[in-house]
Image (cartoon, rainbow, N blue to C red; front, side):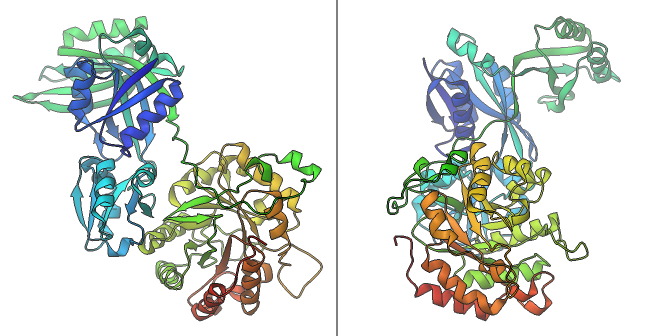
Length: 582
């Protein structure tokens, strides 16, 4: 069976992305139809031009989307499923554009409400309402004006050839929209069955109007409470033309087929002037799963590798044969790690202040860095050392990334930080001390953010790849391995940077490999030659620490580079060939 599904907007709109995910989860073949307005969605389903439709009904920031409830009621549509969808808002622009140079930002009116704080930080940029997020992205792409940008999901960037100038731009990281999927009254049996495919819990929605008299609403709520029914939503609005009457949107937990709920609805009748049952429907558990990210273009395959060691049986997903062409990891802002370009990641060891991280971000960007690094949660050997600014530091790092148009990298230290950190930064870093924190590895494997996995202080390469396997096995394909030095008997340097690991890893795994010479030696003046060597042996990226005033750095001052030292390293790297194909 192939069903026709209607949504408001064009390809790349949040409604299209959510609708696609639900239909894929339900396991049905489908054809999507984008229409201009919410009303067109309702009429397409009511008129039989579409089997199902999808409308937003409320948002965690902007509140109730009244058109959603009203249109379902007006056209007597039948709810099938509620989707709780996290709105992944990104600032999207043309390649080469930067957030600081924007003069116009296009977005759906609801999205403008959801991203008001971020939009207020774009000095000089005018906000222009658009029909939907997909149309906004399409117009920016067609206009070829780098001073214009749109707010939309990452799928809109992929479909319209845009890049991400900033991620996580909603006013709150837990920005969820509830969508309602529905059918017509005379739908086919196959369509009627869609609401029962996910085996989820049930919810019932209704609209009621009470008399304008003292205690009218309280009596209605008392009926529901005495019946043991829990409310999931209660909101009112004035009835047009009847200024003293109010229409209430009510969501109940449970199905109308439950005798308790059926009896309670009957008992409401004496206390209301009207009641309209929209219907009972499935509720997906948690947020609807995001669609799989488009598979990035393959890098050129390296020279054929010899047979892998027997230990590869413990990490089959990480082994080179699992993806012989190599993995390319998109990290936002048009940056890809694992391709032909050497990517440089730079920034302070720790975020210390707004002024410090913004100044460093601008300095490294202007000198050629593509990603901004910064620590907010710092695991330190000495408990009295600076431990970072925590979530305040994360917010400052994200702000600096948006201001400079660079994706950001930061370390996540515990399982309970993962979900929130994944909404704030572009790449999650697993530090050397957590390389074998298997619960943490599983947690980052369940989010849709690239993961930089640092080699443990005394870990073998097989152990590093086994740790990567934990992440891959949970479904996250975007893992980046980092050689940052290992502990040996040598005391002249902080660690021993194992550059031999790069060609070995490139032979054994398809995952990108980067080098962190700052931690490898711990002395600023020795970082420059090791950065040159890292590129020569085939590293896909290099990560270094840079600070406006290294002697005053609150952590790892000895290995922090000045802006001038970083400039010299970037100049060296531009003149050195790569060992990728060697």
